[in-house]
Amino acid sequence: MIYKRSSALFKDALKVIPGGVNSPVRAFNAVGGEPVFVEKAKGAYLYDADGNKLIDYIASWGPMILGHAYEPVVNAVIEKAKKGTSFGMPTEIETEIAALAVAMVPNIDKIRFVNSGTEACMSAVRLARGFTGRDKIIKFAGCYHGHSDSFLIQAGSGAVTFGVPNSPGVTQGTAKDTLLAHFNDLDAVAKLISENKEEIACIILEPVAGNMGCIPPAEGFLEGLRELCDAHNILLIFDEVMTGFRLAKGGVQERFNIEADIVTFGKVIGGGLPVGAFAARAEIMNYLAPLGPVYQAGTLSGNPLAMASGLAMLNSLNNNPDIFNSLEEKTAYLHSGLDRSLQESNVVYTINRLGSMISVHFSETPVTDFKSAALGNNTTFKDFFHGMLQQGVYLPPSAFESWFLNDALTYEDLDYTIEATKKVAKTLT
Ligand code: PMP
Image (cartoon, rainbow, N blue to C red; front, side, top):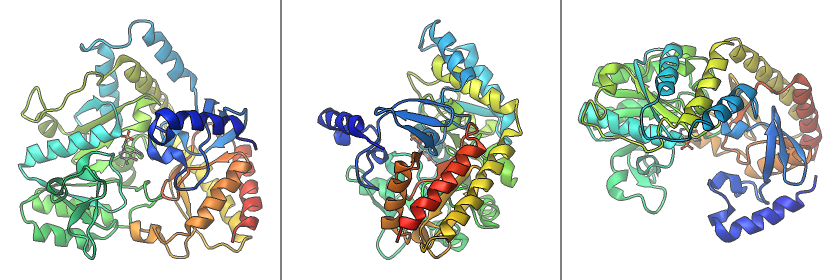
């Protein structure tokens, strides 16, 4: 495939946009080469600026669970736009989507809408701090919760206990309140809690991680966190920005039958428009302004176009609960096909999957946390990514990102992908 016009568009973009992109992973820095510029998309396919048709496995990093340009969503947005695009005043549709989300997700009474997953997680942590009167938070290495300062923290050298900023601009003062543990390691969390008694407001995690490739929780991990939180009056925050309305109607809480105290959403809940949300039981949500003391606001929060898009998406999912099973079946089919294709090559690999999230790690050892994810062979991943792109299959351009399946993918698309993998795998070393 030829990417001549994409290349020219990228050069133009580089002149006026830092790195040519509005979000770093799009720039292909992790895989090398130049990004593909997309012109339009329909169903499971992307059509790029050079007229290439690509099978899409990123689904806009999650939101397009029913495929691109899904008609009920597109029509809802068009009809809404004709009536005005923003008012900064309450609208009925905000209550409609809030009521639907509360009905679909277990264990939440109230929900507030924001404009991104970052905002949702940032606000959830502020609310947890306000509610508990404590400052520190525990997060897990490799879990991503958006680019707010408290989350851009990595483990300090030698120890997991002390966070240090992993971006200039994040202060030491902020870093000291974020404690780090390894995913799936309950003992480390228990140790952090005992070393910081009565100081920890919340534990935040992706209950099924998608930002170090897909990493499911080990058996008992989520239950163990719940018990620790209950024992120490710590709030448990499930960041369901990726998993919410994707792994089940009610997300990971429903799928694993575990209650979180605060849940954050993004991606699917907006149907492809900029939406995030956070939700909890009334006692916690009533701590937010204007009812309570914790401040949080947004000029475009609850924007009518975003709400129309999100409502059409949630209604479609709610009215077709089998969708989660059928997506999971497709993903399982892809999983076994990828296995067959990769087994014919000499590469070592591990495939992780949960529901419609899946990723191939070019690693011999099981991938259960950030350390083991980082052992993957990145050169092999790069070659795999570019090989698949040449075959017309668009994978996430980073080994540390989950693939997201969408319902518009057909079994023919999956078979094509499996065959393409077989061809590409033979070229890998
Ligand atoms: N949490 C998780 C689990 C995410 O995957 C992301 C984004 N990929 C975010 C939060 C941040 O969301 P946004 O990019 O909408 O700010």
